[in-house]
Length: 405
Image (cartoon, rainbow, N blue to C red):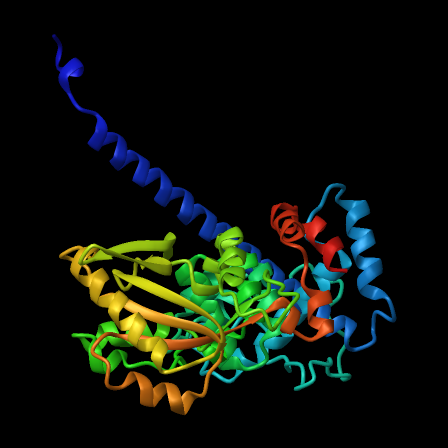
């Protein structure tokens, strides 16, 4: 028997597979960086010329049509895409302009006046519309360097896709919120669908706002900080529609969640793994059932979720505290952190919750939810069907432009 017949190629295969995956990721990251640089440069060029009035009305549409004629099959340069490129430049350029310029970074002709605050071209000179070097493909990379902070990495800016940037710019108006969503997209590998879901749920405003007792009950402060960041104080369950609001049966909510479990996890975060609903635990030969049980990979702990249709009652925490004790005793693995419990209810007074949770020994918090029928009618009409959203994600860039327009 030869050596090749007895050698286990499992480790070698895994090593090469990992190298291939890393290579593909790096290649995709480089391509994304080049595309963002192109779109930023084109956005600057379009802004300086179209905003000044030199190109006249309807210039972007005519330019898109001309590009399609010159480059048949070109994708990503529809009228709406070009306008998004212009917005991409116009929204970020003032931010980049306020940071110190690095030595050796100024391009030739850097003494040329920049556009004013409203990004109209200085009337004292014509824009270089016919200059082949008018679009600087290194502009974005030069500009984004130096904007990093302890909370935000400039590298993240170049890692996420153009459609992610477009959605963030369109839906979040504060700089801090935009940097937050960029960082989350890069760290969590959010799809466009996941980003839209979190923008609708206002994740930036709601992250870390959950009333809880994590710092009093979790053994490590860093674990408590991560737990606080992992939950929101309100969740938008826009895939659930309840006809009779007076029906007290929590199973209606539970069935809606189970039917749409992938979308529920999108609301909670992609580090949550679903274990089961009506999860059975046995204590002293008696059966008890937890509404929803998850495992959080970052926190490395079980997360029990109890669903309540009405207003929060302090007595709910006694039941949840019992479930967490049972999970820690009979289900939790030795290397896992203490289980966390969340009461998800329709209404809750923050003061009452904070009084109620502080004397319990198990880590717990209380969050609220909104279903589709509780949202304003204009919001409901704006929410696409899940199958339509899936089609949008699978569509080519220009197909997505048509859907947006």
